[in-house]
Amino acid sequence: MNSQVTRRTFLRNSAAAAAAVSLPARIHAQAPGANSDIRVGVVGFNGRGKDHISGLLGVKGVRITALCDADYSVLERGKEQLKGKNQDVQTFTDMRELFASKEVDVISTATPNHWHSLAAIWAIQAGKDVYVEKPVSHNVFEGRKVVEAARKYGRICQTGTQARSALGLQQAVKWAQEGNLGKLLWARGTCYKRRPSIGKVAEPTPWPQLINEDLWYGPAPIKPLKRKNLHYDWHWVWDTGNGDLGNQGIHQMDIARWFIGEGALAPSVFSVGGRLGYVDDGETPNTMFLVQGYEKAPLIFEVRGLPEKTDAKKMDDYRGTSVGVVVQYENGHIVVPSYTAVAAFGKDGKMVKRWGNYAAPKDGVDPGPPDHGDEESHYANFIGAVRSRKHTDLNADILEGHLSSALCHTGNISYQLGKKADPDVIREKLQNDKEAADSLARMIEHLAANGVDVAADQLTLGEFLKMNPETEKFIGNAEADKLLTREYRAPYIVPETV
Image (cartoon, one colour):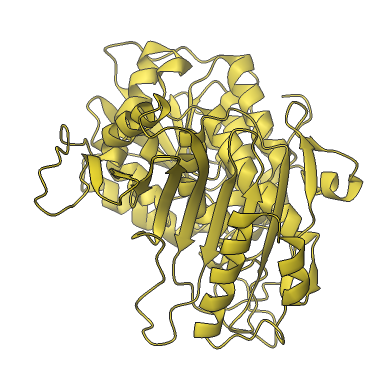
């Protein structure tokens, strides 16, 4: 099949097209020289991939030489847009053809979640360095395989958790870990972000004519499209997405784990939540909290997708942040309300230090040096590591991305194995966990404000799971272990041995 896409080649039979393309050869491509241009191929750019393109083009010495998307209309539109930026690109619908190209050094991928790990592994095996969007995986097993592939083949692999490149956050984490606020008590991430109903269809939606169905689904099972919109709403279906915990929340999950300073999965996890407030074709919870039981301190995470009943544009907040992180210490707390802003407060509630672009009244608190744009510097950091050939130069190495993504997955696994329960039963179960009980009480209050009676529309009490952080397997729960991976659809199989 010709790698230059035309409408005629795109509409060929998917199976025949796949058969014509072999898996990428396991080779080491020659590393880009310190002074040569870095040539990038972008896979999937109907959403975040657009930011990959603009961000990477903002780094000196980077050229976009190839685009790949299973959606023909997106592909053609992207090619025309890059022509206007003097970027002459090849176009592909099958990423395996792109990975075989000698005109590409680096792969940047922002496909739907179910493709992230396999795309990264195939690209690494083909000798490419990789920038992979968050979450780096659709499940725990495949995320670890990306880490193994990157190390085995000596490739640079950066993840899309760009807050890791924010100077203010780097300084704040260091300051807190030096003990300036005393003992760490807990970290709480919040993802309070309005997510309206995606609607409900009576009959499957026809598959869009100009999207290659086989290539779009890839590792996931091909099923009738039982929602109105193919694009973006895949986040709320288990086969392709991970809910808002793995969509927006992965950023704040990563920041919270960063402050705690843990470099492995937590030895225990449980969750409480539900898809409440409307009935639609979505499967993932729009309201939940989970507790990752780290030994140093618990990591609590809260997701809310419903608006306040009184104001559809206003979401709840927690200590001044709706999508952010609060870290509690014995002598005060830290608030991270964005990717680049941080502030520390003493026991009396008064600000003692701030970093980055944290906005505050004129209180005489030194904000420190101005922050670099987190996203801009994140791409620059990646390209710098591609040139140095040192994965230790990365601000968000694939291992960090895997661990934070996996925390989202284990929280979701607890939920998926859970059962509906009366609120009094849940309260009794959590009565000895002060922070979990607090999260539950505020969740119920939030739901009530949105017209949800949890006595009638019950919450799901997730399974209480124990994990071996070294093996990344659950202890004594074969059913939970099954959800650490998936059944892959041939030939789109994440291999046991990379």
